[in-house]
Amino acid sequence: MRTFLCLTLLATVLHAQESFHDVDFDFSFSPPEGLVPLDEQELRGFMKIPDDFELNAPLTEDMTTDLVHKFYWRDGTDLGREIRLDIGYSPRGLPFIRPEDFADAVVAEGDLTIETKEPLKPPHPGFTLTGTAMRPDDVELRRLVAYFILGKNSYAFLTLTSPSSRWDENFGAFSAALDSVTFPPPSDVTGSAGGGGATNRSKPLEGSQAAPGSAEAAEKWGSLEVTGSLVLAMVLLMGLFAGGKRSS
Image (tube, rainbow, N blue to C red; front, side, top):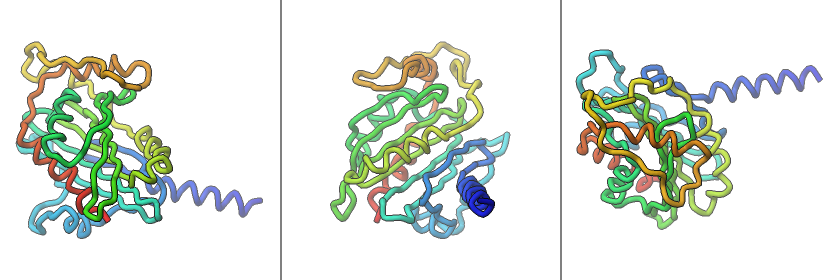
């Protein structure tokens, strides 16, 4: 009995060690068991990041340039799951406010065929898109992209990918990973950056099956002013969805 309890405790500790935390943005979540993070060299090779470029540079209080931290997890099992995390800061503001704007940018990029879009569950401001994409070996992938608004200048994209044929099998673990996301409440995003009235307001999404209260959360984040750079957003999207094209 004592041995069993010790093994259970050890398993709990090992599972806790798999949790992820970005100190700069104070963003945390727990990837599903079996997913293995890419080390720096693997990440550079996968995302084609030059060796002379500082990967995941620290965020400073007087930051005047765009910054994106990039992370990737590949499946160590045969389930074919992948998770990508992009946490960004831009002094120009958020790249997207309304789900329609994000969806339009994704459609313009041409990689993901969107099927659903809806607000994130409260208390998280943001929204999700789900859809399908084709891998070079003609395997259909299903992808869920969660966009979290961390503050008036900070955001995160959590991209969950699975072969479509195994999506139902993987969805529970992906949902648990989404539910595990934590970050400080974005109290600094109420109102526009310039102090003026916001012009873009979100409507409840047609056909949405979001949890009760999501419409209220959507209204809050939908009232912000779009101050981000479209160029920044498109560059981020190109990297965000290119992963599926190189997945194996």
